[in-house]
Length: 76
Image 1 (tube, helix red, strand yellow):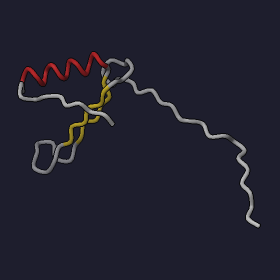
Image 2 (cartoon, rainbow, N blue to C red):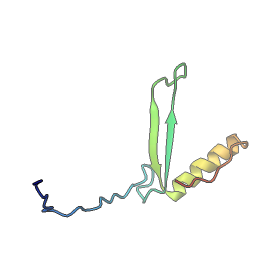
Image 3 (tube, rainbow, N blue to C red):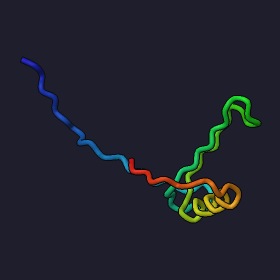
């Protein structure tokens, strides 16, 4: 007869709060910039969490320099 498994500690869903690397406020966006072979920063990566305020500032800066960039709807 197979052994029965008794769960002693019930599963607890892990929760995490991401904090903006710029403002220290709750993060609502992530920016990852990966530099590939041949770039000035070959093999380096920038990976930051951003608050709404910081994300909008980054987006506005990108738009002001590269107006052809567009956001697309993302539904995970």
